[in-house]
Image (cartoon, rainbow, N blue to C red; front, side):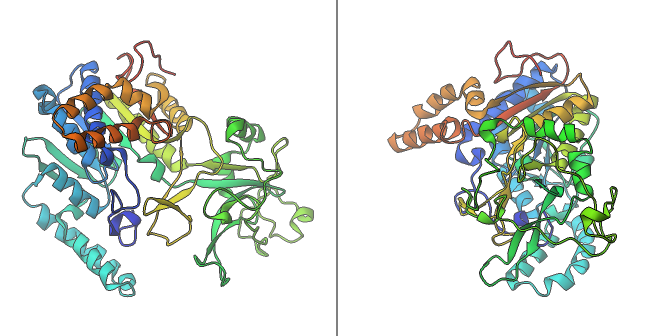
Length: 471
């Protein structure tokens, strides 16, 4: 999201020519069924008018395009809804505008040109050393009417559309229906590894060796730092509980693991990353000084003794920014009412090391070509649930279910047969193949999970069994 060199700012990343394909790009059926879910949930909430339909990380706008195509059948919903995109990539915003056929409000172009002047001057020194193609892209983004922090417009059907850089500018005057498809997986994570020095963070360092073509490497921090305390806590029992929540089937054999892993980049396996030497100076807060263990002097850094019962090299992955964003969404739903539908790949428990990179729709090394490959990690849905319930016990969090089950419960098969009726043989094969990609156990059906958060007292949402109860 970095405005000049961010991955989503400079290139076509989605679709057949990009690095990855999301469910909306695979089939129109996905977005259409999300539209059915939104209309059904809106009715369960009492058909509020207005209602804010919010999409986080909307990609090229494909999901919302298919969603509003199906919701045109319910004029009452179409009249009530106001679409909001939370997106900070100018290039993606332009794709979303084109997908929905949005006509921008007059004055958007002039307002954006004044706001972009400061960013143009601030980035001139850094862009001078960039390639001419990147400079051209930067200048194009700055001149785009979509570069304004908040941009408004209207579809040809009269639906209001607003773009936001961040959640804080979303309106607070009406209930919200939120969809986040493959949004949370792109949020940064922190990884920590259990060592004789305690829980040390896995960091990225420059590698000056000629053998490493990426010139970057993973290293273990010289000692536990403030982030270890902030994200893992000061209580060893709490950390042990976090580890114990990882199912044994998802744990690595940390005691016997060698240097090789199943990932394309072996440089992130627990026993292959080097430990940096401790600093000779007091650059890290020393809350438990121990001169004997730190080698004397004041440079021992923060010391957290190894946790009893936790094997050395054990890894844990946390995503504090995900929790911050989920807390903001939960606060909005608690105050304004409505519901959120979160779809992503992940598990309903903490995880150890899921950091991965994609390039040209294949796994790549995580440190390969920074800013030019898609870096993601699996979502811990249990953490999102815990954050939501901490905001308010009144919010309903329904059990996480596989995407395949959700779409089947949303009558994917009926929608598929409807599309097959007007298709030729080649089109029918494509439609059936697309449906299987969405729900197949060896495709997206099991890997991707769905979680619903709703306001109090509206019953089980569509896609869940009628007798489903909130957690």
